[in-house]
Image (cartoon, rainbow, N blue to C red; front, top):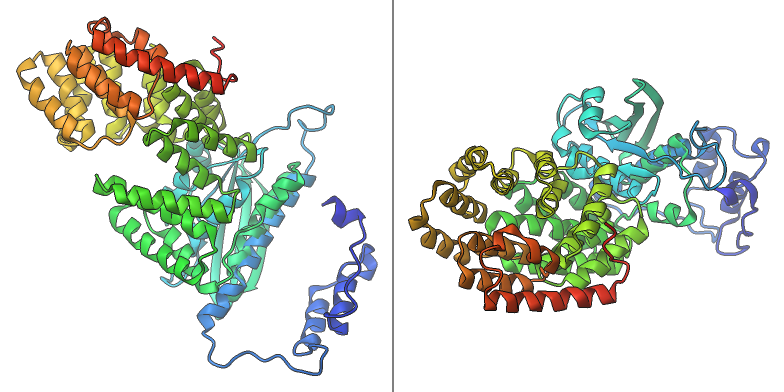
Length: 572
């Protein structure tokens, strides 16, 4: 921004650029407003006069028969780029009452939700743009350190719905909401966007853009930059560079990618999205976001299918490929942290999460993932701090429900129940609420949650977890061997789940079973030795020789991790 306003551009080459083109560029680059183009129509007129002139006496013509669908996709990046630019300019230049203080004062964080855009004339050929464009704007803005943007997963439920801005702002716990609508007529697309301050019930700014449909897929970059302009956020050259849209060089590849983004996160939707991403990659094997989206959908399919380890392995390969092509893709790093942790590669998970926080120190997901890894490695106080930091940045993110487990391990049972309320209707939260209430000495309150999970999924890992707790509460110990047998037969993919099964066996006084499953937890990367020392569920088995041997192994891994990372010290 400084260079654009103050520095003269480098001289244009005297060759390779046709003279008429050089004249147009030179005029457009003038610092003096009076000597630049005054109207877009003047620039367009000059460009039309240039069309076909290569400066070499030859005329450029378009190859006959080129599909219109492909041509329309090339230009689509322009409109989104414009919206991003408008937002960026508002962020940069709008005076804020809390940003005019002395140097060194921490800039205020803005919290923004970008809701799916509305197609004013519903059409299956263009409806997919509503969510896809919003997702791309979110991705572009996620690199700004002073702007917390709600993730795409948080706004998917607003797709194809009538949106009340005040309600959406309250539900998403944001200060600002970006909405928009678009209309395609012939080969032109018109996009109107509004940035609203939900607390003041006021429009911060409104803008309209019109482009040929070919240009639609640059719109996300424009929209994101417009947001930054509108909010006048101060940002670094690195952030400006990171905000640049990663758009496929192949128009059809980019269309497949955007269509894939719009599919719902269901078994059928994920299957369709995977097919779209594979077609996108087949056309452009250098397009990083397609690999990232493919990996995400493959992980979702693995979760739906159960036991599909090859899908997780393929997802990991896709994320690694995405990062190899674009080392700034925070979503791919986040997915790898989760995969590495589940695979027992805790050290690699810790190193990977640092990359997210280097790119954006205010990334809610980055802080939460760091807390998740710290919980595995045995640094519960640091895990609590990082997860609370994530919640302070994104207070209603249901994906942060796992903070409840951290609180439960620390014996903060009321806080744990509140943490699980972030996703109160899921079987996961209901099962862990039951576990927390039993630990808190209130087993009668746990029974309704156990019953609800068992009615919904009696044979899943969560269902069996609840079955074991129900056996304990109802003292039906004759049912325990069969429940434990089924639990160990279910594919458990991460160390913490093995630890939770070990807790159950410790609760029942089964020292041999507790030692066996605790060893699997440690081998799986969960070596939270300080927790093992004081976990009330191990009270009756902690002195068992085999249990103590496994705990010694966990202690060695925990201490080794601490030596490698001295910054992970318990502060409370």
